[in-house]
Amino acid sequence: MKPPTTPYKWKDSDYVKWSEDKLNEYLKTSLLNPLKNCTKVNRYTRANRTHGKFIICPECNKGSYVYHFSWSALSCQHCNTMIDKHDWKLL
Image (tube, rainbow, N blue to C red; front, side, top):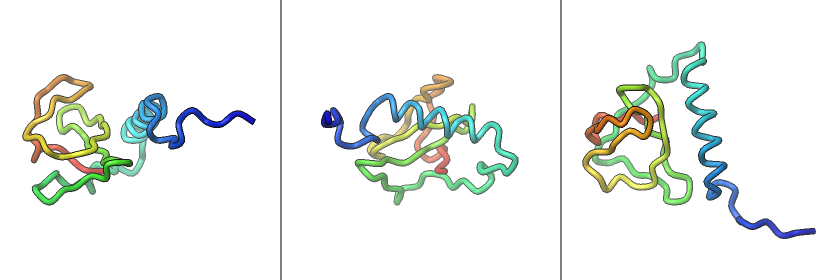
């Protein structure tokens, strides 16, 4: 039996991309709109360094993971819009 190359599944970049795609697809096709219950990022928002937090762009409603909140604005990876930290939504 061969040992795994990465001990943690969530650290693999292919797995992170796959999970982001699954979450974005769910956000688009869900009958229940999960975006209604989203809260916005505030100064007390924290992210786990190993699992991160899933944040959603207010412009294009697509999301991605972040692992810290030590930034004041972030460019969306999908629509390339620069968005202030307090405007992002938390899922």
